[in-house]
Image 1 (cartoon, helix red, strand yellow):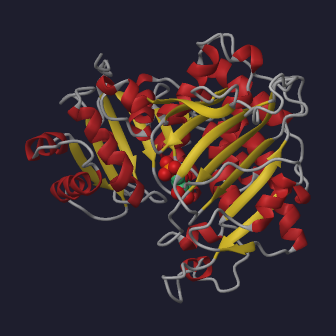
Image 2: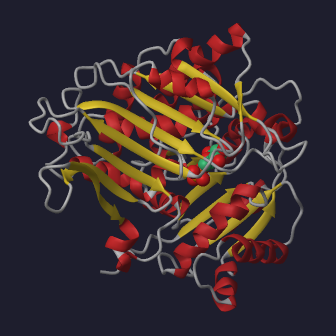
Image 3: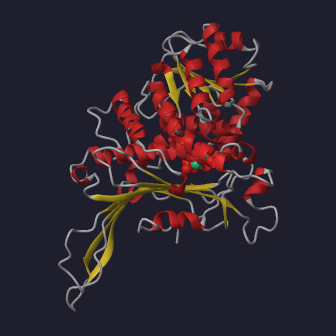
Length: 486
Ligand code: BG6
């Protein structure tokens, strides 16, 4: 079974911030791969824009270089890259002024899907949205795509939403959270709602707790200035971990349609209890022992007194009928032992153990692995094989998607799916305005709590599993974190 490629309609995609890091690393290589695979052809155009003066030829050759640098997980020929770059054009645009907009307008076609991708800082969203509308470049069918961060608190997110809605309808607005484009994240919905096995058990009567982990081995090198104003809570928890929590906890929507899915996610966020500071552990990494001086978070952030967290763990509680009494422990951090992202659902122990004296009954744990090795593992208790009476041992039922479905080809990068969904006009995997605001409304008091308290995050060693406080956070409840790496 080779995965089917359904071509999308001809489009004109205007990419703001086309010379930026995200465009080079992710967006342009993702577009190239979709072209290479035949999802769109020579009737599509990609118009790069930024403040920098560049010729079309210079932009094409920079893009070819970006694909060679960042898009090489697939075998690629120079001819394919050259064919793709023929779709590219470039216009220098002053996002806050008048220069360049007429040229963009002239390049757009009446009968193609129009998408405006803002891979720029959020402070530019309102100006660009206004210009697109006032110049008539944006039509009522056009789509506008916004990269994160979508604000840095509730008030700024509300302002951004108001500025966008002055010119675009909600059905035209695509707020990106690239975690929603990850294959396993969508698989979580398939697992829950396309199988009858799990859903009857998916509640606090059967599930003891859930652990959501996004551990990264890299630090903030090169992005310290942005990151130091943000920290792990704003950079990861308010968006990516929140999305994972929502998809794990939400009620089954009646249909797999954008608003039905997003309605259910909003209900989860609105059911979250405020998190007391005692249910939070914050950390900041020190340098690696072999990294020498200058290798810790504060060096990378360029701020020797920084109190920004590069690690956070917290206990979230969804106060509704399904989840009362089942906590969701979230943790994420930089410079941890390994890169691991997973959702681990811990089922309750059997109500009665008939095997007393035969070894422990291992509680079932369903692990949904996002990266690396996307797949699903179910920990079970079985009989230790062989004669010698009834002895119990733990064993995993393990499914790695790449092994199970080798014909489906290389895993798609999240951006490939998300950009094609924009062209198809499918908003299911994008955050709705009220969803983002609800997530900030939950996060703001948490952040305010430690800002008022003025406490510095606890230092942890680079390459470790995080600060000691995070262990206490879960040990206090008589539970343990799953290991990060070996
Ligand atoms: C980004 C964050 O949104 O997600 C980064 O700003 C983080 O700090 C990244 O490293 C993680 O994404 P992924 O896909 O590598 O898990």
